[in-house]
Amino acid sequence: MYIALFLYFATLTAIAIISARKVKSASDFIIGNRSLNYWLTAMAAHASDMSSWLFMGYPALIFVEGMFKVWVALGLVACMWVNWQIVAKKFRELTGRWNCNTFSTFLHHRYEDRSGVLQVFSALFCLVFYVVYVCAHLTGLGILGFSLVGISYDVAILIGFIVVVTYVILGGYITLAWIDLVQGLFLLIVLCIVPYILISNEGGWSSFLTQLDEKGVSLRIWPVNWMEFFSVLTMFFGWGMGYFGQPHIITKFMGIQHAEEISKSRNVGMSWMVIMLSAATFVGLVGIVYFKNGLEDPQVIFIEMVKDTFYPFAVGLILCAILAATINVMSSQLLVLSSILTVDIYKRFTRKESSKRLLAVSRFFVIIPAFFALCIAYMRVGSIYDLVHYAWSGLGASFGVIVLLALYSNKINKYGAIASIIVGGLTAAIWPYFNAKLLPVEVDSLIPGFILSFISAYLLSYFTKHISPCKAIEEARRN
Image (tube, rainbow, N blue to C red):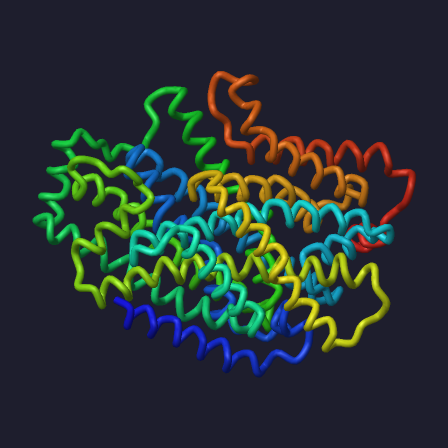
């Protein structure tokens, strides 16, 4: 097992060292100088999306609540496809035209916000929700370390912090893109093989279905009453719409060399995503049959099945997949935070810096948000699923609406954009605490956040339209 872990980390280190030679400037570090092919772009966008949530959070949801929760995965697939269709190419073209290296800089150019308020608020909400997101990944590494090799949770998250921060500092965007490609293919193989072998060990497909039926597990996914229909809508849109506002995914569209190849990236990435979520769903279902007496912590369902089924070397290789998934997403998010702190905060309030100094600052700013996330992870504030869900909803509600409006509406000005981010982000942040008091049913926080963000964007733009016309809007109207 230790040999397998060593080989895995040695491979990542080699990739990081080789690709680090290509990093000569802050632009290389943050956005890879827009030099990626469609394969790298596809895997960067998708592998940086699926974290330990794919192996631990989502299978636990299916294991505990059944097949009906597959609507979460269906919503993710549908909305990511729409994201590729209506956001990816246009976002790449505009950011290339305006030479934007960060998500916040795109909004700044789109709405000509010379005051910097839009950049500051977008940076603030990114910082808050991404720290929670990184905390979720560290929590997953802590659980994995304890279950796999018996080291304490605290030591495991500290090791994870050191490893991920080191990889990001070494190479930046290009390194992460190559690691995403290698680990994305590795994840695909692992997550397909494991449920196939486990179903075979249970006597094959027919025996597996029979055992599910004997345990009273329904494979029905269609709603039969209004309450279930409402639940389907909240699962589908409550997760899926979040894709429009995830800077660590959207910024991957900026890195492709040729915008015309976006459709090829979409086909590769969506194929990978459908296969991965289908396999993760089967992991949850197989767990219901495998653990006949239940499981104390459903988050370790995949880990425990692998440990019981395979030889130690294979166990080490397979569980490296969880490390791969976690490192992918955590690294991408830290890179986004680093770029925001460097370009939107540091660079804005300092004199003109040399390219080498900005590169050094970018690498330094990887450490700060990671350290805050480490401190929160030590407090064990929630499960992987809950932490990811909170951060995902917060980012989606903060930025999803304004991304779509920035690309397709000419009626929004900088005041509407600022209001959209603030109202959406705050709604998502506080909604979980007021949902039960306001409504008799649970509504995902992304949905009210999205709605209120949309309304506030148009209202503020309407009432302030006489203050300052936006040249970018006028240009968009003419085009």
